[in-house]
Length: 556
Image 1 (cartoon, rainbow, N blue to C red):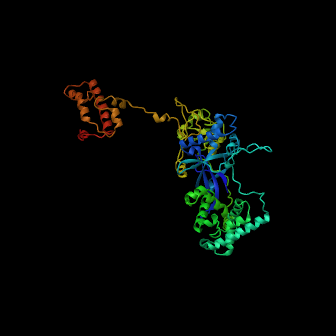
Image 2: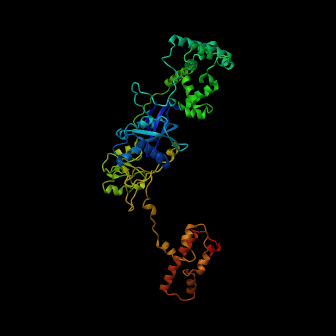
Image 3: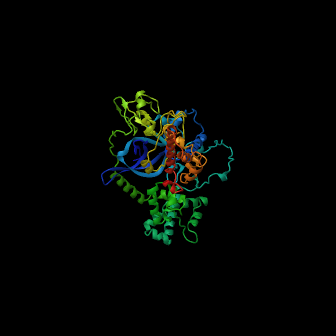
């Protein structure tokens, strides 16, 4: 079918871009699409992104006429959203998740890259991504257009001018169309060559097994390999028929010429058909996984000979009949279910957004609403929450659709940061949604986000710590015995509280002992009780925070 479509696997993530290979109906009556996976820049690692950028730079340098107009930052930003990476990975997805059609093409070096920005829902690719090996390779279907693929044609020689080229480096002449033989004589010689080839197969034991009948032997002897051998023999003997005939039948017996169709066994032919069904015309993979003992030339030659056989015609008919029985198209109704990221408006105020609290948009409602995170517009028919709930970011309808289709924001960010890369496996994409935290400045003011799911710094709430007066007092007690910073870094090391009680000048125990034998006035008693309260709060704070080395400490 080869239709490129958008698939939605998450309401908050961008669409997946896939190529439909076939549609299958399951036993339950649902329709599933077998698709080829395409990946965006945000789906692969940062090191591979650098490799892709290097490849694009090399292609630009090799062009004879590089791009005359310099691209703006906005155009470069949006072109990154249009670049995809093809993969050889297949998966099955429900047809009900299709959200529209798109167009994906191999990058054409003769076209301007700006032509892809002018067309809506249009993407390009030039590299193949292997999600298993985590590698990028140039696509083998590259269109070889440009000066580096063209031959240098020399100037035409004038009449009578000598050819000074080195003839040994030029191609070798194998046939002279102006030979002294007539067409009838050449045809008669070719008939004799076929007859010799048929007789040679009758004498060969292995050929008798493969072609048990005279008809099959004669058909094999009439193939191109026999004709090429006969014409080459004539050319090498200066088109002398008697001399060429003596070479066809030497003293040892007739010459047997075989091509790849005869050299291959039945089992090798079956393996080749199986490999062709799996990999198509990817002869490198066929040789690597199925026929490593065959040369690449042998496999290619066998393929084009195999296409002339009845076996190929039969398989083609079977595939055509099978394609007729499969689904060719499926009706996908318009998807009009409400998106969970839509921001509803109740009585003129923003309602709960993406799990945020009741006051998530309190400031926005009082100030006329927040601007779109991408285009800064203040008016839109519908708003969508974007990013984590605590950042309160939102997108207008136009920017939301751009985000879903292209996986980024329209405008480049003022604080561009490397994109967060996640595992490109479909399972991880479905099970773990990506976060898109808005960036903030040094003064904790929200800044524009470019669609990157990684924030440049954490939020203000994550660093907020309001210490009580009791906590501040505990930091100053027993500083010479109990090192608070060291204890915080090693929370499982026990603290000896007895030594703190005995030697710490700040400990209230000696003071309490002295006070117990003297009369205490009301003001001094209140001070003592307050001091004891702070001491026991400090004591239980460390008892429940660190293991105690002296077990009797708890009882005391």
